[in-house]
Length: 107
Image (cartoon, rainbow, N blue to C red; front, side, top):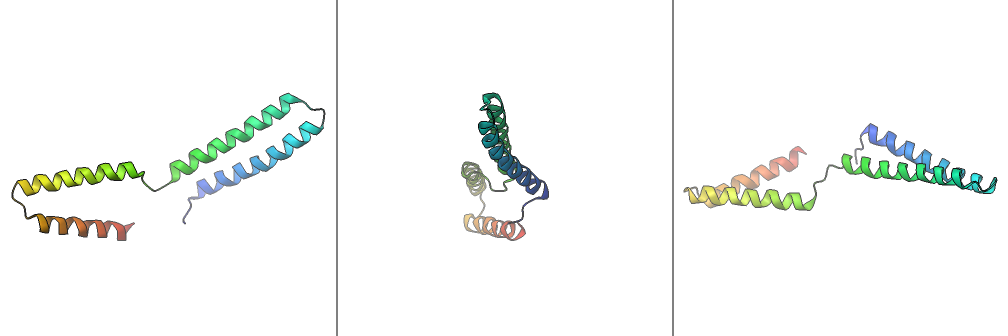
């Protein structure tokens, strides 16, 4: 899988924050049991997890299945419209199949 460089950097930074966060929570819990530090480090680690989730979601190249279904329904409606105008349905569907194959080869 080809991961963009910026996403790779975000993943590494989040991993560093996670490791430092775990160590920070342990050290601050042992060293005087200061709830303020523990909560602050915990929230920072949580924020890094949220950033990682958002960055991975935004960088994802896969479409949500619902969007694919909507696109398929629109395409089917266009085919039906053209067939209603007198186009040959089989040749039109062949054109669509070839276009889909070309799109898959290009991506």
